Length: 432
Image (spheres, rainbow, N blue to C red):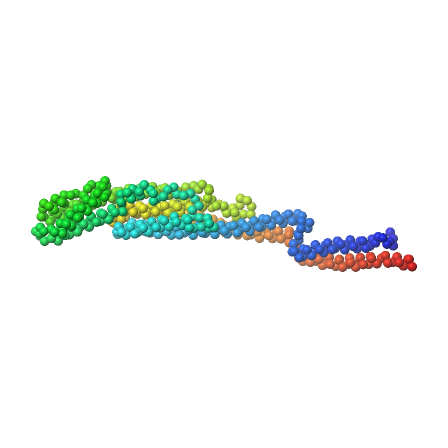
């Protein structure tokens, strides 16, 4: 076909088409260089875009799962911190019970020990309402204890019989007897003017009778033959012997009754230890099992049973408070012979310590597991990011090479179009 036509300049059309194609390639390369991405729209690489977006969703899930694991660790560390302090308090209670078990202590000293033990029991239960993580009470995420040690039948019975005064009345009676005996022994031989000794002896008898009335039903009544002895004889020896008999009678009868009853009270409180242990070791209902999402996909996580933590801490406070109540039982502070009763309370504290240590060990193992989980998540995210980069990101060196080539071709196309536009001018030579 001759090139001598005016209406259709094929050379110009060809140059224009190639210039347009080079412009598209130039624009595509420019876009990639500006954004850094090889795929800026689905048209760039439809399959690559779908693969890249799937990988991106996985990467973001892995990164969030790693942060979730860190938050979970913080929650578990808060829980362990509370359990650590409860363990410290249980250690202190155990130390106090070992001290109170020693019969070198007096009634008042054991009473002071009992007060500290009781306060520590209240503090353990109080911590359940104070230790929180993001408003979650991590030490109280379980069922409430079935009842309260302060409302047990045994403790109500103690309050009804005014148990707190028993030891004081017994000691007061013994002091009166000893003082009366000392006064009689200090009288000169043959002296029948008993004076203050006589009054002191009567006071001792009254104290014995009062004590017997207070503990009525726990033993016999105090003997009253000393009254007749004081009125009928001037023999100091007989009076002293009667006073000693009175002391021995009350000590052996009422003292033994007190000891028996205090032991019975401890037996009653042992049921509280059994109930607390049963509560602490009961199977979790699953209502308070926390789920830590530590994976990018569904059902990828770690369970932790906060109900067990709650049960153990509740039982610990329960046992400590019951130990304090048992220490306050009649006879527990009366001095020699009662330390053996107090020492039995140590076993309950030992069991609570074991429970707390067991839960702390579990907490530590889960925290270590989360350490490994976070490392695995970070490695997976890193490798997946590398793969996604190869699909999505632009090779800047290659794109610069393409861009340069497109620029050269663009300039060449413009030059060729200019040359093609000059072809129709040759027809003017034929028209001259």
